[in-house]
Image (cartoon, rainbow, N blue to C red; front, side):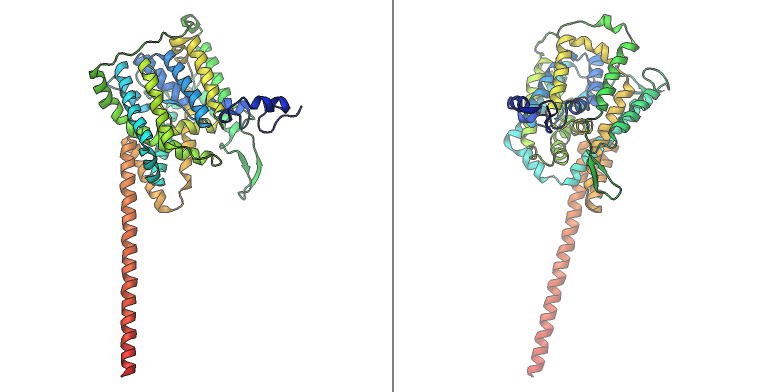
Amino acid sequence: MASSAGDPLLSGEAGDGRRRFVPSTIRLKTSVWSELGGAVGDLGTYIPIVLALSLASHLDLGTTLIFTALYNFATGLLFGIPMPVQPMKSIAAVALSSAHLTIPQIMSAGLAVAAILLFLGVTGLMTTLYRLLPLPVVRGVQLSQGLSFAFTAVKYIRYVQDFSRSSSASTSVPRPLLGLDGLVLALAALLFIILATGSGDDEDVNRDGTSRRRRSCSRVPAALIVFALGLVLCFVRDPSILQDLRFGPAPLGLVKITWDDFKIGFWEGAVPQLPLSVLNSVIAVCKLSSDLFPERAELSPARVSVSVGLMNFVGCWFGAMPCCHGAGGLAGQYRFGGRSGASVVFLAIGKLALGLVFGNSFVTILGQFPIGILGVMLLFSGIELAMASRDMGSKEESFVMLVCAGVSLTGSSAALGFISGIVLYLLLRLRDLEWDIRGLLGRWAAGRRQSTNEANEDGAADA
């Protein structure tokens, strides 16, 4: 029986019947292997952060896996694209720094950010902000975030990491050339992904720029194969981790948050996280989804903002890591084959199974995952996100974008780069307006002189 062109898993009349029971948002756009590859596309960001928080701040990994699985289910059904669910990076960075936030303080920070984003989404202010922001500034934020991911990825590949102190704690010790987490292994994974997926385009292109043929991004699920290899190597590197595994989910319990916890969490964690959540988790995600899925209706910034708010209002009370959406995660999942909500639903099934079966003891497995492989996956995510900025149509737009990105990277602050980009954009608009006014005044003065000259010539002729 011939396979349906739209869905390789559902064929013939039986397939058509079963498709009626599958929501349109999670129907396969390519193949199951493509969506499975996309499902693990953002784990290069997810794993280092939750692993570091589990080791250094005693985050309950089992609870985080279960709740992020529920978030993935919900976002896959709601948005119909591989919408990622990632830990809030600024809160994680503060928690792992010298400030070392406690679990109640981390959850307080997440709840504060959730409340603000929920307010901005419900009132429609987020949509207004999205429409007013100049595209070059948004592209600058995307470019800086993508390059930041790429720089971190290269550190993961080149140097030994110590995630017990931070999710980006690169040591000065170069990664050994050989071994089960050596440089050769990381470079082999990098080469394999390049050969399997190329530049990530869905079409082969001739030298003259014309499309030659459409290439199925699902031929080789490169990210899935590389990730599966990493899981196998976890047990090869340290077979004793099997003895440390404990079966069963982690017990759920409410986190007790005091007023002092909330104040510290708000000022130390929520304040630096809020600009990143607004810019990268909502605005940049909506812009990037329009680029990657032009055939779909544009994502509503209000819905995305409310989504982040509701997720954390549920999970943070139970100790799940504060999460948001992210343009980098979306770029990574798209880069490795994710084209529909099915991609994150597959990821949700995997997370839920791991959280229910192994609970918090799964951290012993992740602790042996080859970090060089995570670096390779993060590198492709960062490059895919940075490439969204290639659509600047003029030198002036590129100028604003690059200044915004440069300031963001140098100051390690998306908010500072955003403000610099807005100021520069307004100054350039003011300069253009000044020249327009001067030109208008010049044309008006020239017209007046011409009229005066013509009047004088008419008077002389009458005389």
